[in-house]
Image (cartoon, rainbow, N blue to C red; front, side):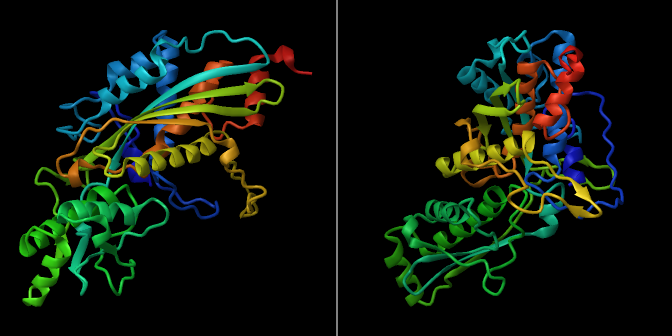
Length: 420
């Protein structure tokens, strides 16, 4: 988590002189584990809040400040990685401006009334796959084999838990193998029956494991040949053909990472996105309601577009909870929010109106041009909501979550005449 947090700490912006330091320390807190985006959401929120503060201090529109400084193809990241392809920064920013008009919004203009409305922007990127040489060390494998009915069985360790892995694998295998989706089965990810593809984390299932699967499919297709899939597969097996193909991850030849200095190509590719959140804040209760949430997303080619939209909207709702609802406190080594009655997470009743625009900038080494998307929506939601709150109230909130209690205290500090 510290690693990814540091790598994303400079944000998706050009900066000639940068130093990032990260430290892991022992504490007496209860144990914590990885959260969606492990490490990046925290530092992405910090850099985006900083960009808003710079924009306000300089009198520059926050959209324009980001547009001037965003990373483009040929630029270098904080680790010295030269971005050579699939850099969706500019088209993403252009799309979010076109569909929301945020670039023309009078951000942080004076507001009146007991219900204050605001609009906020965030811009972010997220590395797909394990950091540095992680994928090379793991060497994830995928197998494809023909069953007695002539169907293709995908054997991979990636686990389906609602993100659509099985549907994704069927689509990749069907396209790469030249058959219909119903001709493809996905084996249960039991370690007795599947090779080690690596864990289901790090926005890697589609780009990394899916890419290995596509290679295994093409290799088997070359053996069996084209034509009506099941009949040719059965005939191939009847002739004694080897109906199993196994492929292993092969790193790009340009991927060089120095673990000691933390420099080089941190990830094969990055996803890029921008969010615009619209909020209402009640000045009597300081409750925040997110009314609309718009995203422009480059995750390369979307193999299953509707599933990608679902991933992004679900992850963004999680980020909305991270922004202003989800409080975690401890006492005597125990978590006080230990049940659903006290652990306040957003439900469907808290969900805003979503609009997600896909902006495909294909990645040549991903399956059919795809990149990772699972973690990325967690990075932008919180800073977009905090930016919208600042637009509504004029308060630059930096701590998460921006609860009603924290907003009330910040408001009274800025307006002492309203204290009882």
